[in-house]
Length: 271
Image (cartoon, rainbow, N blue to C red; front, side):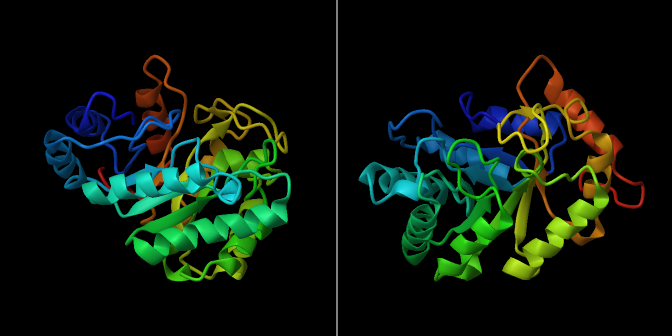
């Protein structure tokens, strides 16, 4: 949800949509300009956070795979972490970033995350990527390579994005592939290392490596896959958020579709 209208609006909108979790950017995701909270911001945020879990997402510009090339990338990361902690948010989703030299990029990502975890009391969720451009994290092995180099592993988790997995070549339309992917994650990271799901359909095809989210059941993944993902008993209490395009009343429609896929034996939190 956008915070441009303030946290009071986010609270009311999340209540209207009956959200079980919310994800926000803590600043303009397409600008380097720094942000400062006003007293009313923190006041309204407490009301929101008292209702449901709130996850922050690092904005688009800081590239953790290039912190050695330009200091603004690590400075931007630090600034957003500090904004999170001022509000009381203790979990941040991050894109791994991009680098033409994947091996060097992996080292820089691990270094950036350790700099944060060494100083700040926040948990980091590494998001898998679609592989677009020189994006790092399109394979579980790349994410595992980052994790292996991080010192403060106890506060590092994964955010699995269904669209990104599909775009990177994991055909999660097949239940066998979904289970194989989860096994690979558990073998590389250990159990209980997935901290959040991004539940997005894909506008582009399998292995396209083009990052385009789409509405649930209207993209190339389809509702059958989301049905068994949502009802996977290994993740009964794990939150998920949708990052589907903001079009007309599609937030309401996507919530309706996603809730219709839950088994009656696995009710969502606010049902």
